[in-house]
Each structure stands twice: as C-alpha cells, then as structure tokens.
Length: 396
Ligand SMILES: *[C@@H]1O[C@H](CO)[C@@H](O)[C@H](O)[C@H]1NC(C)=O
Ligand SMILES: *[C@@H]1O[C@H](CO)[C@@H](O)[C@H](O)[C@H]1NC(C)=O
Ligand SMILES: *[C@@H]1O[C@H](CO)[C@@H](O)[C@H](O)[C@H]1NC(C)=O
Image (cartoon, rainbow, N blue to C red; front, side):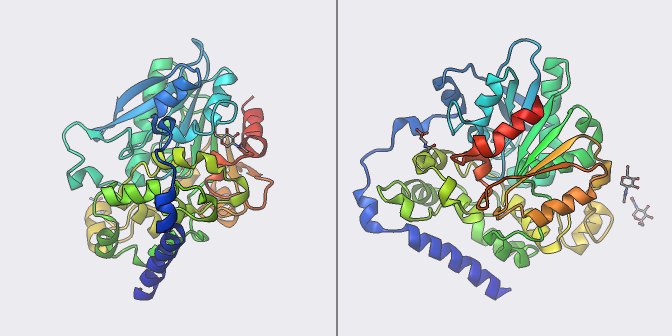
C-alpha cells in the first residue's frame, strides 16, 4: 500500500518536474489574454449566440446553474453533461464552428449545458456554506440521483416535452447510469442517450488514478493528500501552479501540472496548445474528494456500485456489509457508446462489459484514431471529423 502511494506521488513529482522550469516561467509573456478569463455565458455570447442561465434546486438543497443556447420555440432539447473536474464551458471552448454546443445549436436544437454540484457554477446550497465540509460530502452517486433529476425535470417542465437526447462525457456518463438505474422514471423523460468516453466499469483504467485504488478505503491518507472536502481546492498555490506553469512559449514540450492532465493525460497529435490557457482557466472546475475516492473504489472492485464506507458503516447506511450494485438491467432506452482506443479512463474492454450488461444492446462507435484519448472527446483538433459528425448524423 505504501509502495503504491510512493508510485503515485513520484508520478505527480515527475509531471511536476517536467512542467517546472523556473527559467521559462519568468520568461513567459507578460499577461494572459483577457479573453481566456470569460465564463461560459460570456464565451457563448462572444461567438454571437444567445445565452441564458437557469438555476434549479436539487432535492437535497444544492443550487445548480445550467447554461442554455435557446432554440426556436418548440425546438427539441438536448442536454450536455460535463465530466469530472469539468463544467459547461468544456462544450464551447473549441469555438464557433467546432464545439459541440454550437454545432447542435446550428442544427436548430435547444442546447442545455448542465453543471454538477461543486463546480464553478454550482457552488451553492440553501443552508450549507461551501466552507463547510458537509457541503463536500457527496460522490458521483449523489450527482446521479439528485443533480441529473433536478436538471432534467426542470427542462422537461419548461419545455413541456421530453428531451430528445442526453449527451454525457466521462462522469456525465457515470451519473447517467446511476440515475437511469436508480430512478428509471426520470430516465423515461429522455428519448435517447449518447455516452462519450463512458466510465462505468473501471477495472482496466490506466490513469494514475489507478495507484490510488489500493488506498480507496483508507480515507485518512487520501483526505490528507487531496483535502477532506473539495478535491485539490483552488488555493493560491494550486491555482498559480496549474494556471501559469503551462503559459510559457515552450509549453508543447511539457505536461502541465494541472490535476486534470495528471488524471487523464493528453494526446499530442490531437491537442491544440492554443486552447490551453482557456482550458486552464476553467479546469479543474471543482469536485469533492469523495467523488475521486468513489472512482478509485470502482477501479479496485471492478464493480459498478455505491460508495463503500467500510463494513460497519455500510451496515448502517445500506443494511448490508457491501454497498449495493447499480442494476443496469433497469435501463431500457436507445444508447450509443463512443469510445477511444487510448482512453486512460474508459478502456474499450470496460466499455464492452457495460455493453454486455445492458439489457438492450447499445450501438458502439469506436473512434477511428488510434491515439484518441479521454479529453479528445471535448477538445481534439479533429473532434468534428472523428466524433461530432457521426453524432449529429445519428441524432438526425
Ligand atoms: C436488513 O436486511 C435483512 C436481511 O437481508 C432483512 O431481513 C431486514 O428486513 C433488513 N432491514 C431493513 C430495515 O431493511
Ligand atoms: C434488476 O432489475 C431487473 C429489472 O427491473 C429485475 O428483474 C431484477 O430483479 C433486478 N435485480 C436486482 C438484483 O435487484
Ligand atoms: C487551435 O485553437 C485556436 C484558438 O481557438 C484556433 O484559432 C485554431 O484554428 C486551432 N487550431 C487547429 C489546428 O484546430
């Protein structure tokens, strides 16, 4: 166990060392481009699209902000849900002719961008302050059973119609499968779902998150490393490092210290370094340490099940010493899975297992690019040709 921890820390240290070059740090361009500092609404408006913000309340008191590029009255609604440490901004960063949110808006859809609890746009609760550790006492289980139902029912009520599609990326898929198996009546409000880089079974994950897995049940160690409430809270040091360490003239030679890249890696051929300052301004957008621990537990157990509190506490919470599994056989809707060959978090083998456990066989689309990695689904230079074109065809 100690050895695993040492490996994980060494990995962090290596990526840190690779990124860290004092000399270049001080040679960097004077000031970041002010355009990099825009929020999601401002980014959408800058591209000439209308943008709205809508706030919805979850059953357990969190206030979530959704962003919307409204379509014409009566246009079908499509919901996009970001991944771990991400936000609604992820769907628009590629820019006007390239980002998925705009491509969908151009096709006449009413586009909604969700934000999970704990990220930049959803850091409020009716009675708990975000300074309070209780605010951060959630994992992707709660995001699945509370956040998604709150956002989906809000849209359905406003539109007085079903959602045409749910498009999730990464944790946006994990939470979809939680919601669809735990609250099938909500899933019935969706006509179809598209999972980009689905993360459900995790036995074959190759991300350094793997090295945390053996520690998954030893919260004290993990909490002391990453913070007990928020995962790597954006204190001055982390913020400074993750933001400025890559903004040098020679960043393509290095990996960023940013926690997102440590977890998912990046694909040199498909990564547009010009986007880096924008990405770093929005990522990590914030989540709880418990969310990451829940993932580490999934890697360790190889099962898709609820949070493991340890035998004694599980008995109190679940009336069973093991956490209950999510029952995927309750999911009956048209599903398409998109997977990349080189995805550190969503390996093709794990995606096959998901496919096999769903009662109705999903369509599986393997991205035809050998090095396609996790975040390529959002930001690849050829995301349109490799993924979005196919997705738009399927929607029509
Ligand atoms: C707890 O589980 C036991 C055995 O599985 C069952 O008999 C009992 O009714 C359960 N109790 C509650 C409160 O669900
Ligand atoms: C899972 O759901 C299916 C379909 O509703 C049901 O038949 C089955 O008994 C459930 N399995 C468990 C373990 O609850
Ligand atoms: C990289 O991103 C910049 C800024 O969004 C854009 O102008 C440029 O066309 C992109 N390059 C490629 C190869 O897509």
